Image 1 (cartoon, one colour):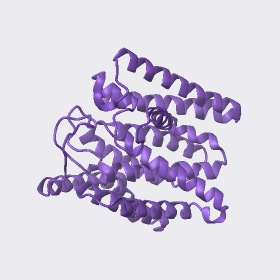
Image 2 (image 1 turned 135 degrees about the vertical axis):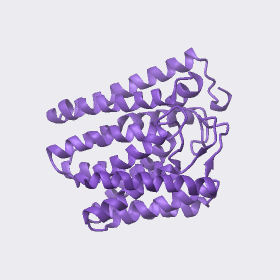
Image 3 (image 1 turned 120 degrees about the horizontal axis):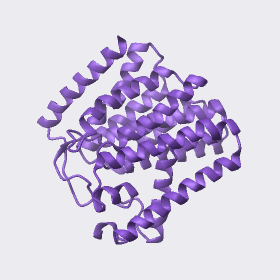
Image 4 (image 1 turned 180 degrees about the vertical axis):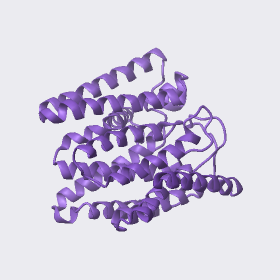
Length: 323
């Protein structure tokens, strides 16, 4: 019954947001880097941090640094969706929020080196996840594939409050109803992609700390490989890697190959889910680091082959804006 109440609450909240967004013109207009062609309401991903706020309210969990950090990074991201903020302000809040997340996970007990590594990886993950949020359904379906995997793992050994995963999935389901379609009613916006990346970072790092097994990083290997390979390709082309682009494989599939957004998003999510099954049922039980590295290497090799083959077949120019 409680989950039904949460679900209905999120639907009502999102419906109210649509009215406000329409009134205040919080919309996403297509540009040369966009993979969509119609004006769409931006910021529907606001339901993600709200789902966590409801989690705190309805489960009586203690309001900790993680939730405070999530609220801060969500607010600054939402403001950035509405108005252009200075990079210094936005980056400062991101750093503060990640610091709070690490504090919640007990990083204050670790060495400065471990703290710095955690900081860099989470900041990188948040930005990578944000860059990958470019077509309908991508954020929803991919996040669900990771959370479903985390849900199963948590049933085997508890590494986090299971209700946190459940409430997050409810937020994804509500948002997905309006986003996972040919013509989306709303986009996640920075508030959605950044907050979801933040939540997933908390889940994955919690698992890494509890299990003391780095191999669980492979739960997000599809996004990781896509991001790393794309950055390397752009560096070899002497491009500014901090500038928006359309060089990811999913963008080539959606824009140049003209595949439907939902199809591309589904493929990404399904592949990650299949890889996670291999991780959970084979890699982890064997606990062989060499096998894990080979598993990751094969994924990277196959991804690179597919991407280069597609670029060659479609005669995609190395300059993403001239494709």
